[in-house]
Length: 62
Image (cartoon, rainbow, N blue to C red; front, side):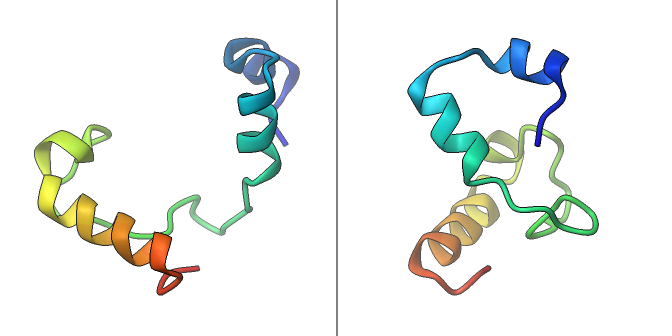
């Protein structure tokens, strides 16, 4: 669960509540590592990011 400071940053809206409630803890906080991707993976590793997103949405990734 986010800290009070993180929650204040995220805001108090229904969409935020749904997003926070869907968070799952993971040992390293990542579901997939993308080679040569920064925190803007959707920009600098677009095709790999789309592949991981499609796999996640289809249920192939936890």
